[in-house]
Amino acid sequence: GFDSPDFASGLKHALRQDPDIIMVGEMRDLETTSSTITAAETGHLVFSTLHTINAPQTIERIIDIYPANQQDQIRTMLANTLQAVVSQTLFRRIDEPGMVPCAEILLCTSAVRNCIRENRIYEIPNIIETSRRLGMQNMDHSISDRYFKGFIEREEAIERSSNPGKMEKLLTPVEQFEVTQPPDGASIS
Image (cartoon, rainbow, N blue to C red; front, side, top):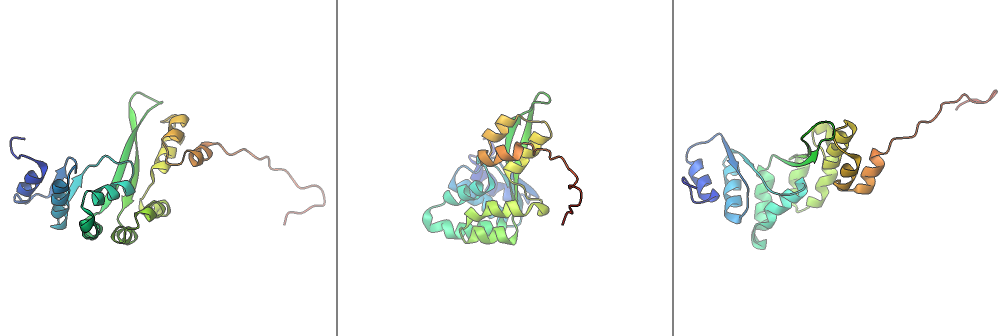
């Protein structure tokens, strides 16, 4: 651009201006990613984007940008600075023109930080699944919510979920059972 030759240089210059919030359009390379994490380590609120499909993949992508001999260090840095990951995908609405977002939300609790630090990213989906009361949400819950609210098509919800078989069962209505009285003389225990 006119003010800076690249994201990394722009970020270094921005830090000298004492910003409250920094937005990095996308972390595409090692230098930009490193500068972004350094900005977060210095106490700045930093937002950035990556093209990934879910929160665990976002974390893995950040770590994988670094050479193998630096990945342990970046895991520690990321575990100490990351606050949340929000992954979003858009679905075509069926109730009105336009799109509706479905989102996965990962909040960096101590359990998540330990998974990042100890390279156990594969455990994060289970943490998201069991931490809904904390405000976390996996993508499939968001997709099913949008379906049941009448915003998106069933077929697209199933096709774009992480587990189509499970999603199909989730979206299938439970059969109604007729409540009957026990025969005369019988009791319900």
